[in-house]
Length: 189
Image (cartoon, rainbow, N blue to C red):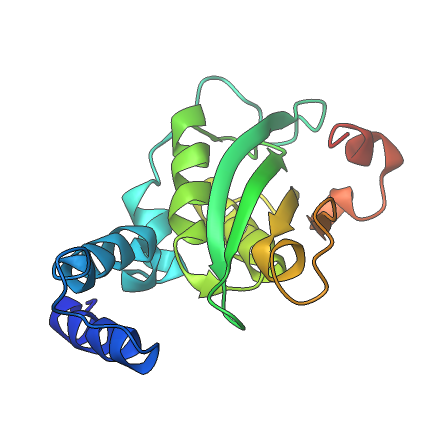
């Protein structure tokens, strides 16, 4: 679990290292506020991919045939944010697309968005977000045919370092028939 007391202590130390006074009025409660924020935005670090699959694993049979490959579920423009593990910098304006072929079962649409949200609440790379979402959706649905695309901005690129404010990063995780089938891939656009 996330140790908020340790976070408060270290944030206080960072304020001091920056040359400011952690006891001044505007900063007195900052360590506590930052610890609470970290507990929220990094909540996904408390769970493995399997834990997340169990949390949001409610599926429905709903008459889908085991071999019916004409059915594809695609959910686009799922808003997520995360923090890169290299700079702890915000990855923002992120949109995820998740697609899968039901293999006898479908997952509730809100659960797809919840999986994306929980996975993104970790220190990580954008590539890993897509891989972890695909792993979880595959575990929940039993489908080997899963695709996840993510488009996002990284503040480590836009607000520091190279400062390219309009740069975006695109990642694609293709599994099963999404790897080779152009028709399946067209659903992701």
